[in-house]
Length: 338
Image 1 (tube, rainbow, N blue to C red):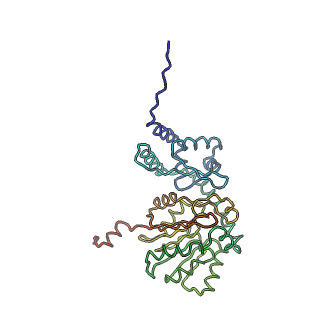
Image 2 (tube, rainbow, N blue to C red):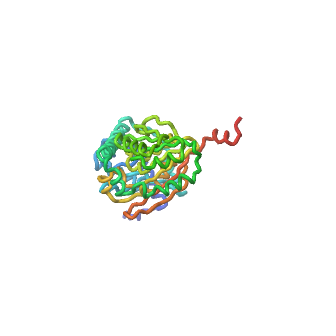
Image 3 (cartoon, rainbow, N blue to C red):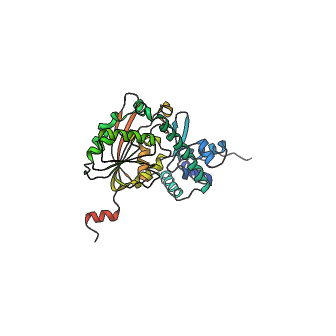
C-alpha cells in the first residue's frame, strides 16, 4: 500500500525559490527593468506591455511575493516600484545580483515608446495645470507648503555649504520667483529655468520689482534642454510635479558640475489626495529612502537633511546631495597627477 509522505519544506530556501521563479520569465524581467527608476499603476503596466490587466496583475503578484516589488498608494491608485535590496542574507544577495543584471538590459523599442507616452501625458497634465492656475499659484501653494514655511531652514542649509559668491547657481522651476531674491543676494549670477510661460512671467515680474539684474530667466524644460551645468542646482517643491521622479534624478545629476551640490526640498509621502486637483501634484510626496536610492543611482551622495512638520499635516524634507569629483579630478586637486 502506498503511504503518502508529508511534504518536506526547506524554509531557508523558500525565498530563493521565489526569486528564481520570478526571474524566470522574460516579461517579468522587463517589468523590473521598466521600474528601475519609475513607478506605474497596473493599468499603465498593462498598457506598456500590451497585455490584459488580469495577466499583468498575476505577474506583479509573483514579483511581489518574491520581495522584488513594493507598492505605494497615491489617492485611490496603487503604484508599483522596485523594492530596495538590502542585507547580507542569501536572498538579498541574489535579489541585488538579479536587479543589477536586469539593469543591463535594454527595453524593446515599442515598450520604451509606450513608457514615453505615459510620461508625456503626465507632463501635459502638469503643464496644463500651471498654465490655468498661474494667477492663483501662491494661494494654492499655501494650501500645502508655501516658501515661507521652509525658506529659513533651506537658507540655513545653503549657507552651511559656505559657497563662494562666484558659484554658478541654477534654480529649476522657480515658481513665482520668491527664492530667486535670496539667491541673487548671495551669488553674482543666478539662472532660473521653467517650462511654463505663465510661471516664468510671474518670476520675471517679481525680479523686475526687486531690481534683480543678476538673474537670467530661461523658458525651457531643464531635464530635456541642453542647460549649462552649474555648481549648485536647486529644486524647491518641483519633484512631485515631474512625470518620472527617479529618472529626473539622473538628469539632474548631469546638471551638477563635479564637486557641486543639489539642494532639494520636497514633501514627505502623505495621503491627502485632494492635493492632486487643488495643487496639480502628480505624486503625493516621497519616502526618504526613495530619494536617497534615486540619488545614489544617479551618482550623487546624500549629505545633510532636515525635516519640518507643518500644522496642516504635511511634512517637508530638505536635502543636500553632492556630485563627487571624478577620480582624475580628485587626483588633480591633490596634486598627484602630472
